[in-house]
Length: 413
Image (cartoon, rainbow, N blue to C red; front, side, top):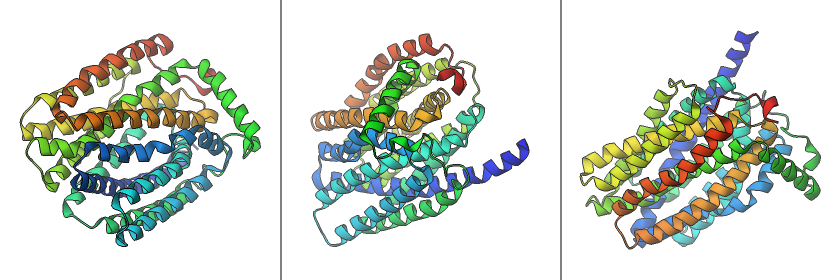
């Protein structure tokens, strides 16, 4: 019986990884091409940073969307949001082809996409994590994320082709349609049901009760809150690399699309390789692993700022991508293993709100500063500053959950 379940489980995971690969290849291609074009048109890191703000502006609806997702049919949410994302891409492709305002069109696209994603991601990650056993969670998540990052490598390399953005958006729409077809099949057996009872569906009183229950649950599980706060560092770091890489390339005298594409691709490539390798990394002390990873990423960011050689910068970008990837995998796997799935959609959405708004504010601040100081200076200061922030959180995590050995869902309620 166990072997039969293992065989059945394998097919959905293969389908999911296929969908993620196609989606992220095109998203990497699209977002990288948009950021480069925005920088070429405006020459302003702040205008580039506002793309991140537009993406994350919808963060305020995340608590509501997460509560609704927990009460809705997960598979339907995933299907409908993929269709809406495809429609947004096709609409943006048409707007760009009609020569409408580039800046306004791009900002509007990312605002609307952000709203749709606030429903898609809580549903997708809850459904995905329901397929995984706690003992294999870190390994499976590492494999999936490595596939995603490998797709990002290819997508980043495609930027060098110089394809018109209207065509890029059209292809991205096709990728979302592919995801619709594949995920509709992958989640057929496992996620046709709701995670929580449907009593709160479309009811303000029900939503209030769900948020109240979540508040009580988090007060009794402080480690989950700390892990959510720790997630800010890699998320901000990744967005910072996306946002500052165009000006970084200019600052080091490599002001052309090909070098920018290469930097993004090695960043993703390092993440992919490290993610696969980390799947073999077994430990009984999850917190100690997190301390090592956060210290490593802080040191690498600082080195990127200190080194004055483009070849070494390329290598450091690869290592930085790898450290962010493993850091995020380890933290997220531990957070999910400590979380009751009844609350997962709401917790993911609350975390999304915190991350979205914090990243948006930091992006504006960093984008403004980058207009006046070299990117290298920002990188040099970023490393030690972030580790000083996460160190007390890691100490709090140690005192809260000990070594981080996964609890059962029943014990955590």
